[in-house]
Length: 223
Image (cartoon, rainbow, N blue to C red; front, side):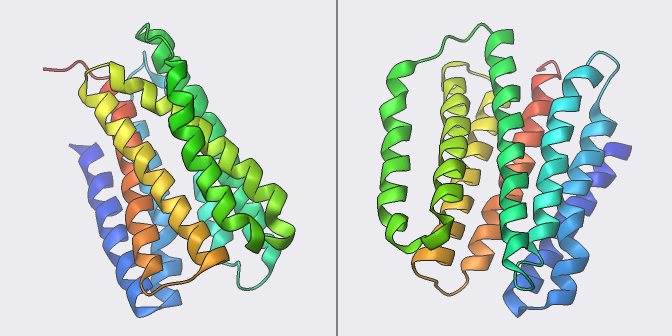
């Protein structure tokens, strides 16, 4: 029952954060945003058992760097270096997600479908063609980050071929993460639009939630 308290805190923080984003209230955003991933980390720890503690160190590390990215991006208006630092944190987080998803593929003996590369590559190329003329000094960081999140997306898509609740949750989380980061990049570098912050945060919070839930489900026997 204790682990459900952390989910209540997560969804309450999400509601406060979305309200703060809509109202453009820095106070509500600053108070709620760090709680989002922190509560998921607590939920993950409370959901773990002795035989899964070792495996959970990887998602906890991914969430830790995501938390760092969240905090740093809150201050990007103060100094552009906060945006770069936040980007690096999320890049590291995605690398750990790649490791986690790959471990699941190995655990479930799921072969890699290399023919899916063109699908992900198409997204990556379209994203770069759209943004590249507007990136300025951010060309290298964005190209590198795009490559890493595309790799994360590719590895997650392999779970399409393993029918389980966990795989569906992880895939949904990965898709939402790609949507969130794509909207963020489009809004920041190409053309801003109304309520972009709401779309970014709504997709981002559910991305982290479903990936974490999928990891928990993967280590919980299905009824």
